[in-house]
Image 1 (cartoon, helix red, strand yellow):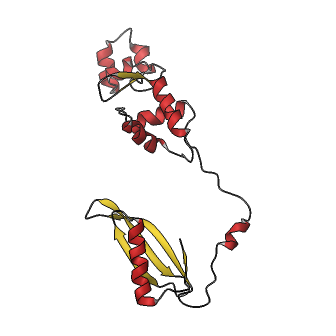
Image 2 (tube, helix red, strand yellow):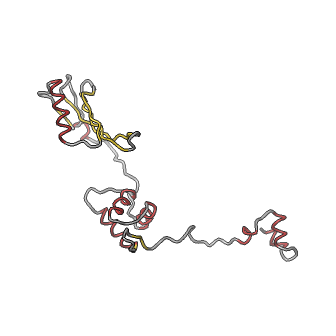
Image 3 (tube, helix red, strand yellow):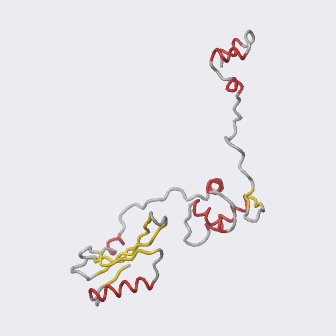
Length: 194
């Protein structure tokens, strides 16, 4: 650039750029100094075609996050806003939450020894003294969806006594599984732990 500026009064700019292999667009480029990309929108569309100011969207986000036991990230908030008929993408929700300090931030890990954990450990002395129920969320690739896997485990032997794999598990499904196990193993006096 400095070489082109030095000889610019004597030689045409087109020739100087060609000799130095500098594209003319790069020579004329002046950085704007602002944020890259287009200016963010100030309104958000609704499914009925109306527009809502972003300040009202932020108020709705605050309402969603103010419920008891709600610890949502921006993806879950996006889903909730779409339920309220907003036409909005996760990037915009992230930007609005970031600008208003509504993001979760880093999860803080506890320090020190936790005394209550020792009371949760079960010490079984024989088979079928304690049964433990464990439920997991499993992706089934052929179905392209998640299923619930409920497993009943004998605490002493660590053997799987029975299991259910379904799209949803209701109370009656658990009762049927425990009845089946009772018929096979006679569960009288067995402690069942969730």
